[in-house]
Length: 398
Image (cartoon, rainbow, N blue to C red; front, side, top):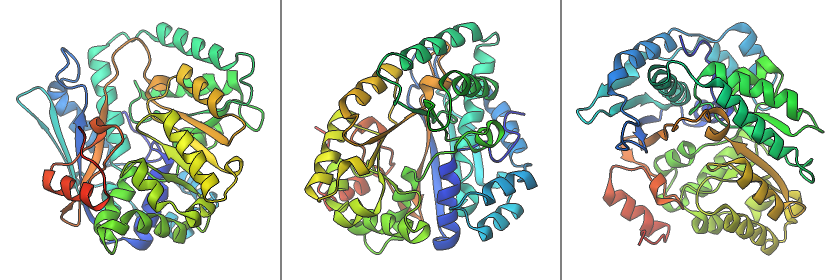
């Protein structure tokens, strides 16, 4: 059994789910799976493992939150008691998920149902697909190679002049396996140190945060802003509606805004002086991170906000060398945070799966992300994508 706790997911699933419970309890959604490296020779052929994936999902749906897990969530200052009471009754329902083998060797995964009852599927289902794939294709995993690579990363982080550089683990969804994930976290905690003077800031994984005494990290994901395309008053105001609804829920807590659902230019148009002051910072997840950081700092200055009081979070396909480059460019000019995913939790010498599960519909209408990295776009309705570009004044990719 791969997933043995419903806490084995990212914190932002719970922070978003609380907003759904309080503000959008009737929303109906659809998510779809995509393997971005499907078609590469010998990589991403998941069809042979459909039965195994289905069985693991069935076991996932047998889980309930334990009292100690609920107590851990209840102790978080931004989690409200009625939400924890709801989680005490909560179970995932298998009827909302279908997994089908396709003739191409790929698989189709569709998650469809009430947002409140489907939001917790994404991360564990991706972790299941990854672990099933790798335990079948790499029956004797080269853990020694993984440890050697991790040792190199730690050495790079402990170089002179980097004592203030902190990293966090964002790697649950694409991890090689749960046991390796835990080993990576234990190693990083022990070697980099935690707390104010350590270089390991924490993890997005709530279970391991609880188990290992780490700081759980996360705020919002793309699906939240995408859903607001269907839930807000009008499409052009959906990004503003999403940020205002978030602020209404958290009253200044969890103040990191995600900037790449409509691209950076559209984000900056909506992220006015009010939001610059209200939110603690922003997170980068597509496009050139150096350009993004410079644009964010200039935007704060233009809106008479001291960038040194704000946090820029980088989380798009980071490696340690790229993280060090970004740190060198922006240190001292703002507060910095770095979330590293696949390169921490799935770097044992094998090609990792580039798999995602994205929301494609909410309340029966298409929703989409218009990324600064076009390959990250995911929408099955070209007419809607064109309309979205028009509404947000975004040029189509050349």
